[in-house]
Length: 200
Image 1 (cartoon, rainbow, N blue to C red):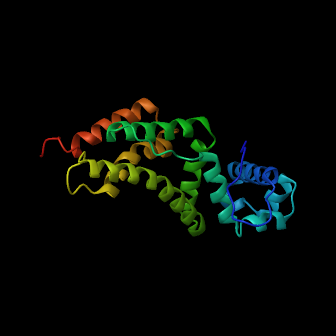
Image 2: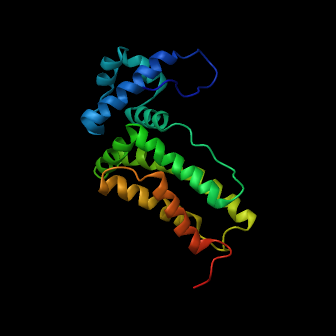
Image 3: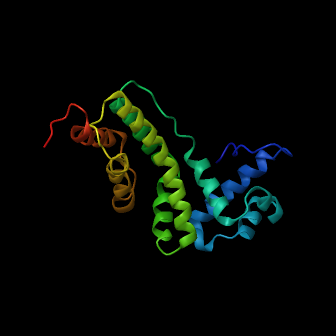
């Protein structure tokens, strides 16, 4: 169950309890009927609120689904352990442990699969993934400034390589990887891009 709601700008205070019910209802229906079958009317009925209550907070079904997904995954801290290895292990291990401990671990692959035939959902999934990538990019940029990565390292490709194993296992193998596996991924990737790694 979602305990809180997203922060909002100045204006009339929002009912956090109502928002929590709406987001919980959204996630529940997503897991049952998918994005295509989800309706604002259905969310309103399950949450026990009016349509207007939902539209005052989120202008569209897509915005509602994105908000629910972000609330479920929670905030991703940007660790500063002093090394890129420590930062990546903390970031990626924490993320996969969260995926293993919440419905998002099952919901995200289902949404990604459905997004292939739904442009609106594809945009939502992309925005969600881009938000997650921002945290990894921050860690890698800091590592590059510290001189821990080889000059010219393509950070976007590096993020793909780091995240790829986790998404492969979620989409193909039926669940997120363990934190221990992500440590192995980090070590193998850094063997190729660390500043002191051997040039091919």
